[in-house]
Length: 484
Image 1 (cartoon, one colour):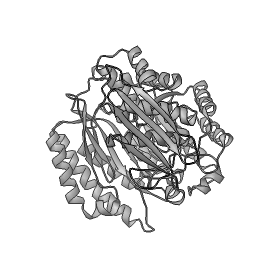
Image 2: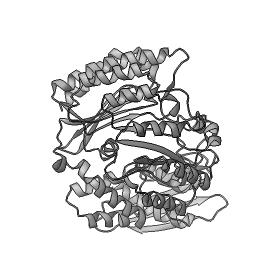
Image 3: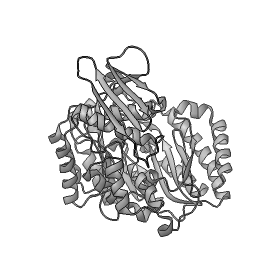
Image 4: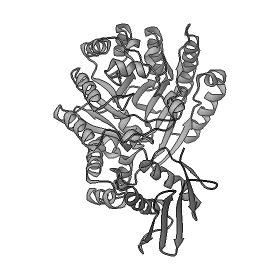
C-alpha cells in the first residue's frame, strides 16, 4: 500500500485533504508521522498559503496561493480549493465535482437559496467556489428546481408535526459481496427473523404512542432493508396493521416498500401491500446479466425479474422503482447498457442508477481493499443520462459516496409525477424522519435553526434483540425531549 504523510501546520485540515486527495489518487493511506513514500506539505504565512506534493521517484510540485481580503482563512473549503488546484496540476486532470466530496450537493444549493441567494448566485458559487464543472452545476440547478415543491414549507404547508417514517428490516436471504449494509442472513429456521419481527412490533407500538401523543402526522412511509419481503405475507400484514394503529397515516403522500430481491416476492405479499396502501414498490435487479449476479452472490432465475415486474404492473401500484449498479464484477459498458435497456423494456416509473462503491463492511472490501477504477468515462455517463431522458426519465434526486467508481454519483430518475418523495426529503434534510428498527436513524429537524438532531439505533440484529427494552427507552426519551 502506498503511504502519504500529511505535514500540516493546521492538523484539522487532515480530514478534508484526505477526502479530496482520495478522489484523485484512491487507495492511498495517509499518516501524520512516520515513514511514507510521499509528503503533502501545508504552511500558512500570513495571507499566503504554501502547498507542495512530492512522491519518491517523481518530481515535486510546490505552489503558493494568496487569500483574498474577503476570505476567511479558517474556512476549510478555501484550503480545499487551493489543494484542488495543486492536485489538478500534479495529476493533470480535473474532477467533474471539483472540491465537493460530501454526500448531499443538492442540499448545499437548497441551503444557499434559503439564505436569500438567487439561483444565478448559487450557480456561480458551484462553478467558482466549489469548482464543479458546467455539467454538474447545471445538474444541481435542475435538481434544485425539481425538488422545490417537495421540500418547501410554503408550498406543502409543512411544520414540525409533519414527519416521515422509516422502518428497517435488516435481514436478507443471502449477502451480496458488494453490500456494506449491516444486514443479517435469515437463518435456516427463520428464528432470527421471527425474534426481530416480534421486537420490531414492540418498538412500533411504543414509539408510535409517543408521536400520537404529540399529534405528529406521517407524511411519507418507507419500509426498507435489507430485504423487507423476507417477511411472510402474514408478517407483512401484521406489521402494516401495527403501523396504521400506532401512527397517524391519514395524510400519507407516499408509501414505499422495498421488495428488492425478486425471489422474495409473491402475489400474496403484493396483495397485502396493495391492501394497506403501498404506492411505490422497489424491485432491484442491480444487473440483468446472469454471470454478474453469480459473481456477486446474488440469486438469479431466468425470467423471474421480468415476471415479478409484470405482476407489480398488473396489480397497478402507482410506481415501480428498479435499481442498477454500474461497475459490478467484470462488467463493461456494453454489459451495463444491456441491463439498462432490459430494465427500460419493463417500463418502471423510477430507475435508480448507482455507481459501485467499495465500502467498509462488504465482502468485496474485505477481500480486495479499496479499489476504485476510473469508471467508464464521462462519455458513458452522459450516454446513460441521454438514453434515460429520451425515454422520459429525468433526474429527481442525487447523492454521492466515497470510493465510488469514477468518482461519480448516484442518481434517481423518474417519469413526471413519480418522483420518490421520501428520497428527496431524506437528502434535503428539511423534515424530521423517525427511524424504527435496527440500523435506523431518526433525523429530527428544527426549522428554527435549520439543524438536525440524530437518534441512532444499534445496527446488528443480535444486539437489538438482546437489548430491545433498553434501546426503546433510550429512543423514547430522545424523541420526547425533542418535542415535535
